[in-house]
Length: 168
Image 1 (cartoon, rainbow, N blue to C red):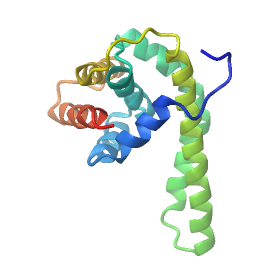
Image 2: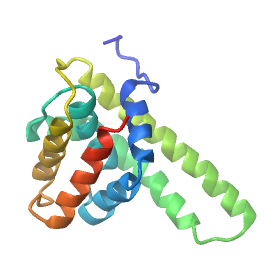
Image 3: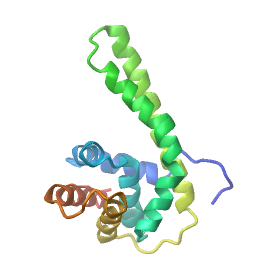
């Protein structure tokens, strides 16, 4: 780990960009967010930890990661997301331009959130990457959150995200 500085350009960020761009993943991630109240960056972190780093996360690890970024997510990312969504129905060109700038700030804030998670994970030992671990880690996220991993919808979303995690 390189000191206490954040590294916005890191392996986790590049993994997230590639996975999020895969077919079906954006919808799966947004459904995790909107239907289950889960943080998309935490879901991507769980997938990256397994598929990209070979790390098996327990619910306690997920809780540690969530606690690390909770204030940032609630005080920075969520307000930017809410503002972007409130501006969406406005058709005026200046409002659309403002919405694009807010969206860019939201993405930058999410990148910094991921940099915080990456810095935390940099100290964890890595083994061989595994798609199976990505799915296991996503189940740990659902167990920690209380979202109920037994539902068919949640399982389908997890499978979609885990499959895409193996793509990059």
